[in-house]
Length: 178
Image (tube, rainbow, N blue to C red; front, side, top):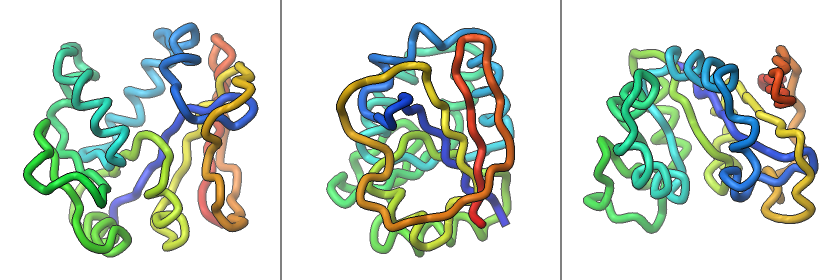
């Protein structure tokens, strides 16, 4: 069975909104290498609508080995509002029950499914035990306000499976379900 791997940026105070505002000073070659390692394990992306729309505007214009891999992968978009035909950039809108759709994707042969960004769909995925691994990129920044990671989710216990500290100060904490 394929693994669903969640990867997301957050500040020291748990803010996930607008990572492009806080992250760029810390995104360097070491960051890129870690991101490439995660992407190399995957052959598909799962994105929420907001992340998909932002990525679909930015990524097709990029061209390097990492961007080419991201651009070539099939994308699955979790959205209740995006019409099925409105998902260019090699994407399929998952309609109906998200948990059932993702469980079916995980049963298909292939490598990891990489999920960028954390939002509404994560509540459903976590509640149904569908996320196999979390890579939380903790930026050495205090945002002071904004959308926080997984607000409103019931208590969910995880086990720490590793940490990577980048020279920039980013700590990537890796967790799995208990």
